[in-house]
Structures are given as C-alpha cells and as structure tokens.
Amino acid sequence: MTIAMIPETELTEAEDQPLRELLAKAFPGRADHFRQQSWWLARPQWRLILSDGGVPVAHLGIERRRIGVGDEDLYVAGVGHVCTDPAYRGRGLGVELMAHLREVLPAPFGFLTCSRAVQGFYEAAGWVEVAPGVTMTNVYTGEKITAYTHPAMVLGDGFPAGRPIDLRGLPW
Image 1 (tube, one colour):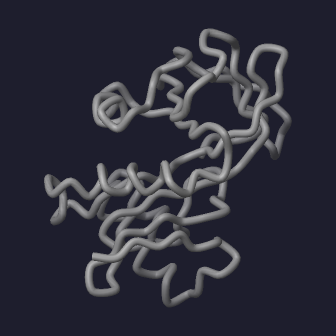
Image 2 (cartoon, rainbow, N blue to C red):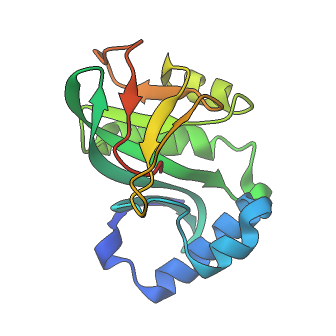
C-alpha cells in the first residue's frame, strides 16, 4: 500500500478515472454523479489517496478555506469525499488515511461535516464535534443555507467551539 497527497491541478485523467470509480462504489446513491466527476460540491485542492498496486482504495479530498467562526475568520482544511473501497473496508485504511492527514494538514484545523452514522469513526480518529450545524453559501445564487442535519467536526486543538460557523461556500 502507498499513500500520496496529489494537488488537484496535477491530477491526470488516468488518475482521476479510477477515483471516479472508487467514489461511485463507495457512495452508490451518488454513483451516477461520481462517474462523471470525482467531487461532489466544492472541488478539492488536494487528494489524499491510499493505493494498492497503483489502484486507489481509500481517498479524501482537501480544500483550504477561510471560514467564519462567530466573529473570527479562521483557515481550515475542509475534508470531504472520505471513502474506502467496500472490498477493503474493515482493514484500518480509514484510520491510516486520518493519521496521514494529521501529518499533511495544510491549515491549523481540519474541518468536516458528517452523518451521525459515521461520527464515531471520526471521533475515534481524534475529530471533535464543535457545532450542530453550519451555514453555507450557494456560490451560484448567493443564497445562505443553514443545515443542522450533520454535525460540524474539527481536527486540531484550540478551535473556538460552540460559535456559529459559516463555510462561506459549499461544503466539501
């Protein structure tokens, strides 16, 4: 197994196609979308990819962004598209990916939202819930949307928990 952090601008079509296949398998409800492009809402700046024999088997996307937290501006590494190939689940690859993320985090804090169903995985990897939801901005319409269905979680010490969070864009 190998792990690499690849800037989005350097991702080739030959590397992107297997990522689309991985994401389609990992997120079957959005498979049609992921077969077309390898991100959901906000396009990542980097990909952290764990590969087996050159084939991606675990993945996450990272976008560094300045967000609003209460009346402060903070840089975070927004994390999304976290997945492991279903055939490789249960082998600790997600844990390995999270451990490597800590080493390469391009901001003081990692930031993500997740469903309650997978919240325990992130907590075991050191993520902490800091808010019950976030405000996002539809960059196409300017509409502000506040969502409380997925907890906001942070990796890193010193994040000002309990304050309103504005992602200032679409979620990862």
